[in-house]
Structure formats: C-alpha cells, structure tokens
Image (cartoon, rainbow, N blue to C red; front, side, top):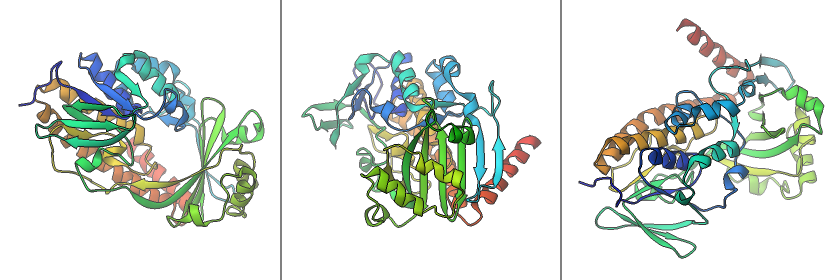
Length: 387
C-alpha cells in the first residue's frame, strides 16, 4: 500500500489554474506538493482572457481553497452580458446581467485568478523555468522527471496539469489531441480608443454567427476586447491561406475579405484591432476518454479531457478536477485508492461536459447558427423555469 505522508513527493506538472488550485487545496490540508512550470512568473497573466467561473465547479474549487469570498469581491457579475447576432447585424439575444448576482457565472481575468491562487500558496511550492522533457516510470511506481534545465526529480505521484499536448498523458494512454475542424484568429481592441465599439459590445460577450464562421468578442477587466475570428477550415489553413499574420495591417485587411458581406459594426472588431494577430487551431481529445490505471500518475484539466471552448468548461473543469483529486488524496491514506476514486468521478462529469462542448461546436458553426443557438438558450431557460 502506498500511503501519503511527508516522505511522499507529489509533483504537479503545469502551473496554470488547475495546478495552482490542486497545490493550494493540498496545502490547506497540510500536504506538500511541488509545481513544475515551464514558463516564467508572469506566464499566466499573459495567457487567456476573461473566464466565467461556474458555481458548481470553479467556485466550488475556490471554496475548498478558502478563496471564495475573495473571488466574489473582485469578480465581474456584469461580465455575463450576452449579445447574439447574425452577419447582417440582426439581434437574436440581448441579455443584461444583474450586477449583484447574475446567473452564477461571474467573470475574472485569468491573470487575476492566478494571482488570487498564488497569493495564498507557499512560494516555495512552485518552480518556474522547469520544462519537462521526459517522465520515466520506475519499478516501484515512482517516476523520474527530467527537465530541460538539466534538473532531475523523483516523485511518488506525478499529476499532469500540462494542457492539450501533455507530456504526462502518454504514460497513461496513446490518445492524442485531434483537430476539431475549427481555426481561430485572436485580435485585441482597446475600448478606450473606440467608444462606439465599446458601447456596441456592452459589458460581456458578443457572438456573431453565420456562414459557418464567427466573430466572438469578450470584454476583459483591463478594458480590452479579445476577439476570436473563427472559421471552419482545413487543418493546414493557417499555413496555406496566404495571410501574413506577422504583418498586422495586411493580415487584418485580408481577414476583412473573409467577412466582406458582414455588418459594418461587426467588421469593426477587425478594423479596430491592434497589432496582436494570433492564429491557432482548436483541438480535442476523444469523447469519453478513459485509460488503464497505472501507479503513481494521473491527469487533470486539458491533459485529461481537452475539449473545444464552446461549453465554457475548460478552466472550470481543471479547477474542479484539482479539488476532486485533492480531496480524494486527503480522504484516502492509500495513494492508489485516492487516484482511482478521483478518476472514476472525473470520467463521469468530464465526459458529459465534453459531449456538450462538441454539440455546441456543431450547432454554432451550422447553417442558421444564430437562430439555432437562440433556440438552445430558450430551451435551457424553459427547463430552468420548470425546476
């Protein structure tokens, strides 16, 4: 039996919200862990935009970490505003959130969320500049970890919180992230410089869907709007489309041709964008992915159940995984029993979210997508009203 005590080393690969939440909840229960993060101290602030934190997952994890009240004090409930259009500018939805509560999914910028978690975490817990190159299983269930800075560590439990292309995942499964058929181009707009678009966007999200394309916009806490131009495209599109993404002015001009017959205000999301033009492909893991239990290793977050962003579950599930695993470790002296308990629960709830995300992807980039999405929201509101 592998018991959890002060001599057992827990290694968390990846210092995003999932890894930070896991380490912090373990710390609250007197269990030490070490996070190995490939990036620098400012890495989390630079990745991702505004996040909606769900009551039954992300907020649950923050409560277990002792941070729920602090989160509620800085969260943006007004960030739940939502506007839905088609390419002509026809309005299908225009929802205004209540500033003192909303629907239980308030917004926070990723950097602010990570700062909140880091503030309570023992600074010795996280090691920056540790990019994992290899994890070697040993005969006794431990793993030897090799990092690109030349360091080596031995861990009794290794937790892969290292995202879509996890280096820990191959220890458990041959499953690989595959392309969903969608490509995004990220742009940024400064609302202070463009008050007309700021008024149009309101305080939360704008979705404009048509022609199997989308202009998806989200106001962040710093006054910037993050814009995601989304296309159904072949996997090679970024390389073959001819758009010089490293030349912002020309790239925006060419991107405008892809939305040539769209409403002028919607095209302002492209015209007004600054010099940030970031193309990326959207990947997913197989729906309902499971693996054969192996000693001393498990996965959380995108490493375990990567899905498209169209259920808003990514960070929430990573944090919920972290809480579920941490509590299992606290409740079970036997480490393998703790992992087994966690994985059984995680397979169940994550597979439901992954299916919902895939369904939403197909709906949002189908024919008549704006009308179809409104219909989905109408059905959900009706179900909620009946409860």
